[in-house]
Amino acid sequence: MRKNRKINELRKIEIIPNFSPNAEGSCLIKCGETHVLCNASVDENIPRWLKGQDRGWITAEYGMLPRSTLDRMNRESKLGKQSGRTQEIQRLIGRSLRSVTDLHKLKNYQVIIDCDVLQADGGTRTAAITGAFVALKLCINKLIERKKIKSDPITESLAAISCGVIENETYLDLDYSEDLGAEVDANFVITENEKLVEIQMTSEEKLCSEDNFQQMLTIAKDGIKQLIEIQKEILSN
Image 1 (cartoon, rainbow, N blue to C red):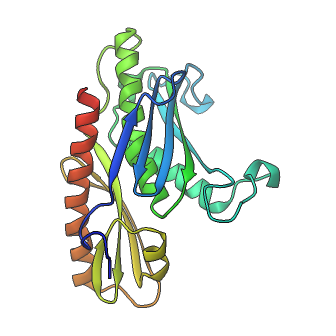
Image 2: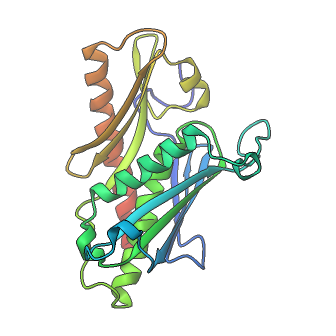
């Protein structure tokens, strides 16, 4: 049982915009003790397979710094390849951002989002998606300001949150210890209009009932609503 917050309560959320002065868009997002730096960079070299299609692209890279966890992990560059987990997460971030972007309005620009985990305590991928959206929006604003694109290609806001089932109770925004002990854990990517972008769910020690799933979806939507309100407040300043 949680001691410092209710089971349907988010961790303390802080988003610091324009954290990296050299990036077109950036933020540092803190979800409890999980901290992720998100940078958006504009590249005029779009993927070769997009040539002549008169549209842009959004892609993402994700990584965890060696001391983002309790024990030091090796850099993947030293190992010579990315892990399957890293590839899966960065593809998830890219898919999520593209789902709320009209790529034709990006013309022939590619936006690369770098999500670097400075400190990990569960929910790094969901924090990365929530922060990446802010970095992308700030980047888009700069492209419009510089008259590189004519109008905002982002169709609606988007965020992500984790949920889990622990001793048949449904929890929102799991930290690492909770995730470790969860019978079922899930990640939800949802838009401002409650459209489901992606759901990742795993039954660890017991199968997920329909009731448990509906409860997770309900509290996930509420958590996403709160996250998007925070995003909007940050972006309006």
